[in-house]
Length: 206
Image 1: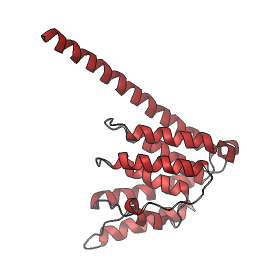
Image 2 (image 1 turned 90 degrees about the vertical axis):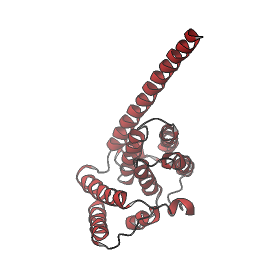
Image 3 (image 1 turned 45 degrees about the horizontal axis):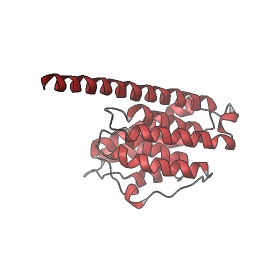
């Protein structure tokens, strides 16, 4: 399956590069290229969009991810994207990057991911992973410089791991997510120390 998806996205990137004028690709178009609207696929697309340096995208998608996590816990395997989110279009540059990036990602997936460690993908583990999705969505929501990167990558890995039932990849996803938590805590600590110092300067000046 991943080889077919890699070829499909390679062809889509090639067609987009050769088209004149180049059409903008929407989130719905990315979903159609996958050929399904399963929860992991939708989460993968949203996590990929969170890596784009566009203000406000992470904030909007973080709420959608929480709603998706709720559906995940309720064992809903397919979801319909909100129309407003489905119509979001990527810029010309980011269309190429996302199409080529997903083609590369599925190519790597074909070589490395496989079903293993099934206990981590057991239905009873869903509630724990739903909480994990919410935690990563919360980190994406926070106004931290480059704060979307690690949680976005964690959710991308999680989506691929669940699609291929690879428990080892789920653990890698969690390690990346823990790095995101550590980064957020370090940023918060540094910001608090800076605030205390600034407050001290203001008090001293008075």
